[in-house]
Length: 307
Image 1 (cartoon, helix red, strand yellow):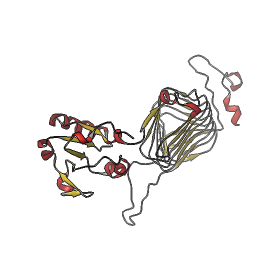
Image 2: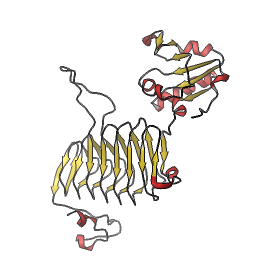
Image 3: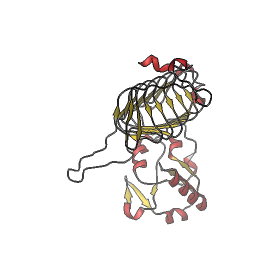
Image 4: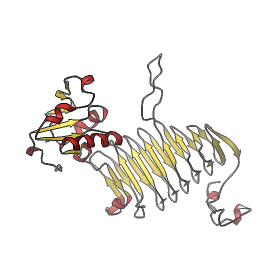
């Protein structure tokens, strides 16, 4: 890969930001990227050397000439503050993501221009899609070996899928998504056919940070495998976590939160969510336009496919 900057024109290349993000992606950078120094605001806690490279404080960086800075930041707020500081110093810079040999984020609009309904990258990430994929789909890869499967006729107002590593995210044919975010790593989020996801829906199979038992020191919060059945309606503000499972034809009420498993044909609601009604089904017929008394009167009768 040809990197987007000629580092040879600079006397020094400095990596700014020492932490998890640097450790995670440093070995994926192009081989021609070598750092003369590392820099971090917490340099005093880190010491004079890290990863075999001398560590300098921001004050030293400020006074240097002929410097190009590669920023390692996985936090948008930190990225903004670091770039503001570098602009004040007058140093040119780039985010480390721009030097990687993979495209970290891709949209449905970009995928449409690829033949064969298949996307692959150098980190083993794969997206399987149909030509009718919506422009409003955004998929981000932090790591590798992720598989995204988007079914035929999936309607999307806004969908943001964020993958860490070793994950599977599948969305079945005919599912309609108004606005949702799916955050997944080391596990699965599987959504069946003919589902309806309303606004501000969050599906997250893992916690971003580690939790341990104080006595044993053992980890408590491993990533889960989430499964949503066919013709499931997730109402506004629903948050599903971990290994949550929702059965066919079920409804998850507004602002419900759960990581538990529920059977088919139920309504669940609350935080933590619980079953409030059994033996139900639902139709996409809009109550703004219709006032149906029976399922047989509805135009949308997908529910009966999954009885």
